[in-house]
Amino acid sequence: MIKYPQKLSLAITPTPLQCLSRLSAHIGGPKIWIKRDDLTGCAVTGNKVRKLEFILSNIIANGGDTLITAGGTQSNHCRAVAVLGAHLGLKVHLLLRRDGIVRPVGNLFLDHLTGAEIDHYSPAAFKQLDTLFDTWSSHYIEQGRKPHAIPIGGSNSFGVWGYISAISELIKDFSDAGIMPSAIIHATGSGGTQAGLIAGKQLYELDCAIHSYAVCDSASYFDSKVLSDLHNWKKDFQVSIDLNQLIISTNDNYIGAGYGKASKEIYDTIKLLASLEGVVLDPVYSGKAFYGMLEEIKAGRYKNHSDIVFIHTGGIFGLLAEHNQIIF
Image (cartoon, rainbow, N blue to C red; front, side):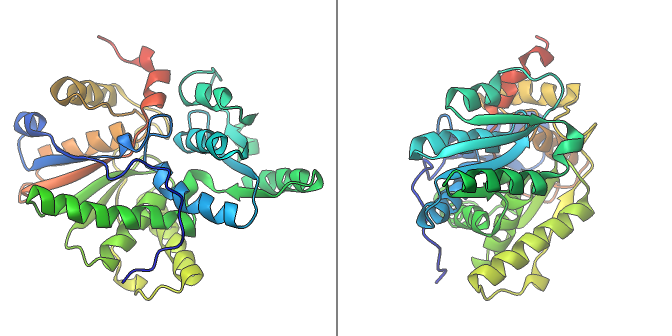
């Protein structure tokens, strides 16, 4: 019996598991299914809310009244924290890395709309994020508030539980659909979703590979980051699990020009899926990973697989901020 920590009910779950039959026929290869975690909410759409259910529950239990977190200008995580902070009556302060021209569109528009305090930092200054967290935490403590810093992407030991619980949901999805996929595929950026899926696979003894497609950083970085997150999670919650048995499989061949930088091929993939299935990806995470998965299918990597499942981690507001990149 897996003992979960307390969580808030913030996500709309379970999310649907949808068969992409027309796309599968168009591409050839295994049948592709998509776990619609872009439907976990309206303004809080995406994978981040699964993590934040556990993270925010712990913060509130410890008397926190101020949330400080960080990410890129179009961070899905920061938008989710801003929306949920407003929902829960908590002050939110976002520390955003200035990625090009700052325009109040997409996720950033919702950050402003929900009343978050926002500071933009140059990429060089943003590298000193731990110092920024400490400085702002001290500032709020002096004001008599109780601040809590949430790491980028919500990737901490409490956040890991978000996608451990998603594995239990997926197992029921597979049973209901009458399938046993050979691979679960998703985009990885901060490593938290990846860590949860890998731990959940082990805890629930799921015979299904976890294939993570990097949207930034190298496979070796994720080897280290995910293992570090899981060491902290195991220590904090005294979980009986052999981390040496875990398989961390990260494909870093489709990062392209870097985080948040999508090529024409990515946008073409987004258009293809939207036109065939009515499912909308984003250019930063799901679009990049989905493109990578399709390229691997074409190259024969999944030729002996019957069913594979892609987890849609959301990000539609980020796509709206980049609408001028798509040519019709």
